Amino acid sequence: LAEEGSFAVRGIPTGAGGTLTVGFTAVSVHGYVRSFLRRITEELPHLDLELRELVTADQVEAIAAGDIELGFVRPPVTRAGLVSRVVHAERLVLAAPAEDPLARRGQPAAVAELDGRALVMYSPVESRYFYELVLGLTARARARPGYVQYVSQVHTMLALVQAGIGLAVVPESATALHPDGVAFIDLADAAAPAAELPVVELPVVELAATWPEGADNPALARAIDLLPGPGS
Image (tube, rainbow, N blue to C red):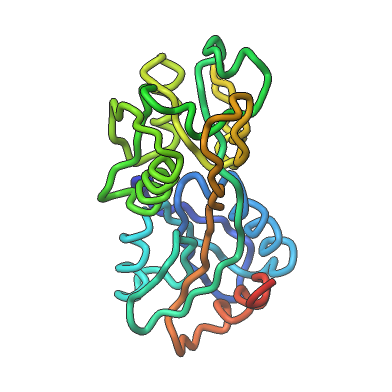
């Protein structure tokens, strides 16, 4: 996520038989990464996992330095010597205070309806992937929101929405956080309810797995086998 800060390594002891260090962005652990970790502990019970929450750029550097072996990042991964594969895609939704008119009407929101609204935005440095995604989306809809804060972590973004600072465009997996007083609204590619608003194609949020090319850790090879195949 955006994206997100880092914290100390946390181990999940699953017995002897190899160690694998896995990095992930914070919001991804509420979606695909959670299901992947569940599968890996079920199918590889003798593997010891060490988990690190890092933003995408820090994961790429850590893999290149040999500090982590498998990362879950926002694409594209352009660093030489790393292999990557998109493993998951999800939609964007709009987070709004529960009392906001867009939330109370019970209908999807057109992106163009963000024009003139206060919008909590992603940091162009730490959360470049989401920053460019949302910026491109609003530009295509000819919407000019007022960017009130720039943050790197989705849970911080939702706290600001909760405080009434503004709206936010977030990945659907963020709904698992269940913040009180925050409503999640579908975004419409068609311009409902106002037919004169422009129609825009809604992008998806992608998550990629990345690892060092030619790595010889058998634990990494077994974990890669549990990922969705290329193009799946």
